[in-house]
Image 1 (cartoon, helix red, strand yellow):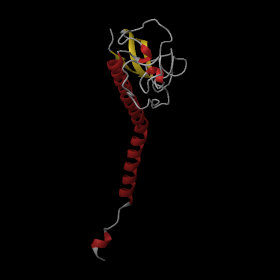
Image 2 (tube, one colour; image 1 turned 90 degrees about the vertical axis):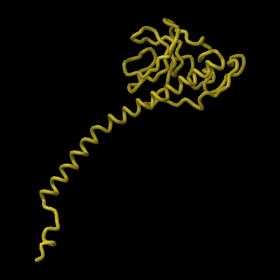
Image 3 (spheres, rainbow, N blue to C red; image 1 turned 135 degrees about the vertical axis):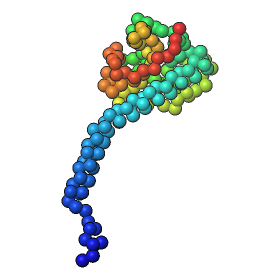
Image 4 (cartoon, rainbow, N blue to C red; image 1 turned 60 degrees about the vertical axis):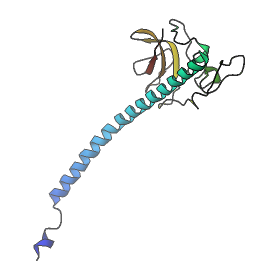
Length: 171
């Protein structure tokens, strides 16, 4: 018999080693996948928070006001229930009163409003509303922030370490 045809196939050992390598690679990928997904969600939330901040900045430039007719760059430390978010807040970021997606009708309209500054404000990657707070407690004390309640979704007056925030420079 010709040796060319005799050595053409794989041995059982070669096939088992190949399968073992594929199983190890699959195990590594499957254990890393949830971590990669969570990091992608956090990155998406940070990007959307930055877009909301940019919209707030454009509203400030045009009308010299922040969301809810607040004075720009002023911390409201110690004032309760001044958040703009979903449940239990003044109103949502996507409501006309916030001034980002639409201008509320007179007498509550924003002077020199040139929006919309965002077409819409979607929910964060975990299905929660974004928030704007002028008295958010940070390590540096009271800060003005735009944020997400993060992966655990714990919200109003229950801020915790998994919140994803952007601290807005203030006075």
